[in-house]
Structure formats: C-alpha cells, structure tokens
Amino acid sequence: MTKPVFRFAPSPNGRLHLGHAYSALLNADFARLHQGRFLLRIEDIDITRCRPEFETAIYDDLAWLGLHWEAPVRRQSEHFGDYHAAFLRLKGRGGVYPCFCTRRDIAETIACRAAESGQDWSRDPDGAPLYPGTCRDMPTDEADRRIAAGEPHAWRLDMAALEKLVPGPHRFQTFDREGRVDIVTVQPWRWSDAVIVRKETPTSYHLSVIVDDALQGVTHVVRGQDLEAATDLHVLLQVLLDLPTPLYHHHGLVLDPTGDKLAKSRQSQSLAELRAEGVTPQAIWRRLGLDPQPTPST
Image 1 (cartoon, rainbow, N blue to C red):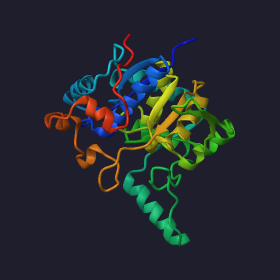
Image 2 (cartoon, one colour; image 1 turned 90 degrees about the vertical axis):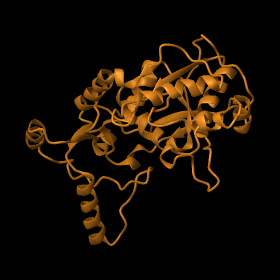
Image 3 (cartoon, rainbow, N blue to C red; image 1 turned 60 degrees about the vertical axis):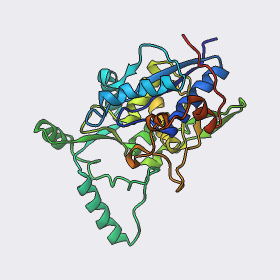
Image 4 (cartoon, helix red, strand yellow; image 1 turned 30 degrees about the vertical axis):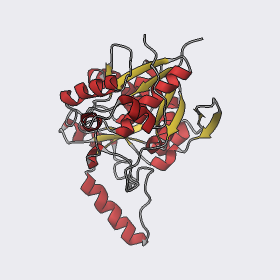
C-alpha cells in the first residue's frame, strides 16, 4: 500500500507562533502514527507580503521543534504555471467569469440592496458579505474589451453555473486520532461567487492548495477549524478538476488569554520569542498536549 502523506503548509508572511506549532506537530504526529510521509510546503503566493527572512525562520523554528521533512520543499511562487493551467481548465468548463468590482463597489452595491430590502446582507463562512453578482452577466465582448484595456480584475467562480454542471451532493471523509472515519456532505454554494484568481497573483489560496495537494500526493490534510468551511469549496474544485479528495482532520485552535485565536496580525508571541525566553521544544510539545516523538525521516 502507498504510504499516507501529510503536509504542513505555512505562509512566510510573519513569524510562526504556537498555533502554527500545533498544526505542524500534529501533522508530524499523525504521520508517525500512520507510518506515513511528512512534507513541508511554503505557501508564498502573496509575493507582496511574503519575505525570504520569514521563510528561513520557518525552517529554523520547525527544526528547533525537532521536525524532519522531505526535500525539496515545494514553494508555491515557483509553480504559478500549475495554478494557471488549473484555472484554464475551470475557464474552459464555463465555471468562472471576470469581475471588475473594487471592494468599494461591492460595499456600495450591498448597502443599496440592504437599504432597499431592509435586511442585512448575507455573509459567507469567512464573515464577508456575499458578492452581489454585479459582473456575472456582463456581456463577453464588454468583459474582453475591459481586460484588453488593462483594467484590474479578478476571476470568480460562477456558483449558479457550477451547481448545474456538477450538482452533487459532494462529500469528503474526516478522520481522527483513534482511526474513526466520518462522511461529510459539503455546502459550497454558501460561498456564493468566490474569487478564484486574484488581481495581485495568478491564483488564490483555494486554487493553489488543491492543486498542490494533488501534485504532491497528499492523502491526509490536517489543518485548523478556521479552514473547515473552506473544505466545502475545495471539494467542489477537486470535483471540477478531476483531482483526488484527501481525508481531512480539522483540529482545534490555540487561543490567547482573551479567547481569540493566535494570529500574526495581532503580534501573537512567536516561537522565536519563546525560544529566547528559554522554553524548550519538549515543553512546547507538552504544552500543546503532545508527547515529543521523532518524525519520520526519508
């Protein structure tokens, strides 16, 4: 049988904190339990925020924790061609359309419609207002003209079209530490017309992550509960692109004293700062409820 494949995929846009450590160590622990492989992937598609020094720090922090991973490490910024090819497949199936709306345009449209209806606008699982579909029915010749003129634009999934193209229901399997497996039916339509290729980069997290998981043969995805809703959209993309769907485990989040999840944007204490205070890797493992164990080496 093929070995199970796990991966930890951080973004080098800041220093790792205990939340990242938990996800990395949990992936490594699952790989050990399943006698599988452990991969590290650098998700650096956001070339405006990702920095080489943060990538170097990722390697240093994970090595300090006692983790080992296979080489070479896949860096997303080196594989934009793979994501563009996947996007062209989606486009060829009629599943996307160009959107020229700015955030301000969307906010103003939503405010007008909310005022007319007297109701709050619906939101997607990330808490963002659902896109009102402004560009969905734009004539093709007008869209082509605006793209040729160099107008900034993104590409959105046409969820109404996709519901007819691949109506579902679509499902994925979850797994836990005890080996229990459950089946979950996804609800991708609650995302509305999600952005799949962004203005700044020729891809998005949703597209690049499912392409990478398929190309790297990832069989088990272990990630935080904050990404659980995104799995609905990822499964839909896997169906559209004829890609395998891994098993998923969505783990609990590490919270700060106020009950909020740790985040780079809130300057949560980094692993480097903990290390400078004299905290040991073994203490980090135990603090996160795990026993220090060697990761599979290849």
